[in-house]
Length: 279
Image 1 (cartoon, one colour):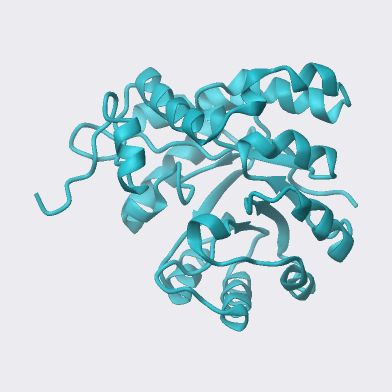
Image 2 (tube, rainbow, N blue to C red):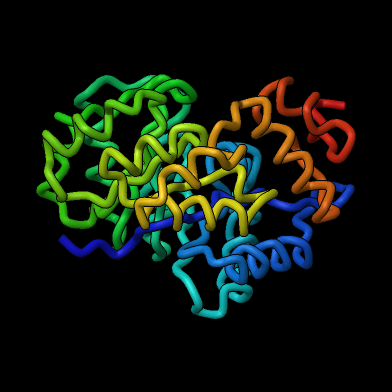
């Protein structure tokens, strides 16, 4: 089955000025650099690296405007729906665009509520969607059987799988075949996931190492496993991701709001600033 998305796509960081307003110039420069490095798409205001939970709707629209202008139609731009409620998710989806969709974030939903959330967002969206499954971060696991139930809605085109269990790729293929484009969302499992049949990689380390990440992806897809196996980025762990994010911010000259609790803030304290919380 032909898929509309594949290969490597970055979940890019959002760049801020010292006063925490959006740094338009550096955000645009980063997007252009990622595309020039060979990316097959751009994902903006991702739930973690893109700091979706700290951005207002107006700020998200500003980032969207920057991304569309900077990409100049060279690659698809996916926006992230990471809202507290299904209603807010639907409101965003109605604005049009290609979206990566998370479950509602404020409360942990059960199976029925989770499926209803995605179906309502799909009904509101005029364009294809990628579902982001990250139970470790968000407490909700969209299982292969749940994706089988969602398969009847053709707007669901892809899955970003970040459960941390590489066996999930095999489970998804066994359950839904080639129905979805499957993307690994965990950098240090990308090689294993792609060997098991994933179509691509939504990467985080790519923010600091774009050309290297594209090279790894191409080696894996071409079957050059020994070459890919010995590239150090493939074995990077969560600590390395934090370092990569800090390095990206340092190179880009932007600030970081540090929305992912204290760990993110401490890892990027030398190059970024936390958003003021009541101070």
